[in-house]
Amino acid sequence: MHILFLTQIIPYPPDAGPKVKTWHVLRHLANKGYRVTLASFVRPEEREHIPVLKQVCQDVFTVPIHRSRIKDIGYWLRSNFTGRPFLVERDDLIGMRSLVNQIIAKEGVDIIHADQLTMTQFGLPNNHALKTTPGKTNSGDLPFRIFDAHNAVWTIVERMKDNAAWFLKPVAELEARRIKQYEGMIVSTFEHTLAVTEPDRVALEDAVASTTSQNELINSPITVVPIAVDTQELQQVQRAGGSKNILTLGTLRYPPTADGIRWFAN
Image (cartoon, rainbow, N blue to C red; front, side, top):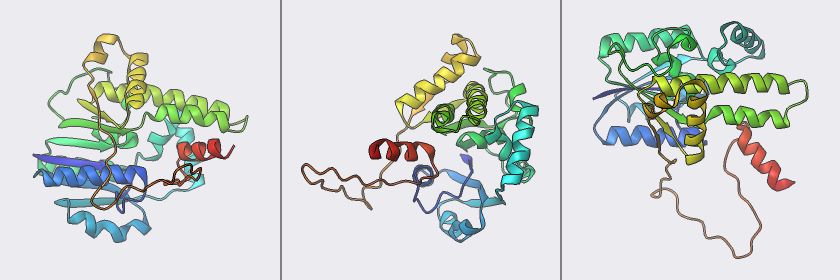
């Protein structure tokens, strides 16, 4: 069984939530004997970690990605033209599309495992995903597709508008609406979806229900697989009785983490 695993970021070292989850999933699949081909975007500082991934995956292919505010403005303008979320437009690079097509054509892929929302577009049969018919079953032209959602992203962006400046609130609201529509379409189109929590599963079902009929929702299975903890490497910390100290593990670039810290501080 050959799995093409698509990631937006090199999933090593496991020093952030998404990377922790993806790293454990990759190791689990490899330990089960699956042939795993990893295709990932890569930043310059991540290249040094590729050899570690090659010890787990049979093949590792990367596509360089560079962020800039100027490019982001262009992607945002394009999203207003296509109707797709800004987050999806920003990661729609021809290099990744060409790589995925080459791997599928040459390697005989059985499963596409799209890790997080923006990578799902590379498992769709065309460049404009919103034109895909929601609820359509696999035609046989594509491998079995799994959407590893991690989170219901539309809920994160919807909460972000609460802390956004007044002039950014309409932008966040529009993006949340587009992401919800896109997530609903992906869950309906892909053969299976994975979420990390029950609230995320419910939110993804809500996204499907907002764009499709209830009958189509039944044909879009969503399984909750919580983020793993490596108990061989990490031992439980004994908490002192009555302590009010809080240790937060996470990046402040992730809005829910910043929101949580702000809530406790206030």
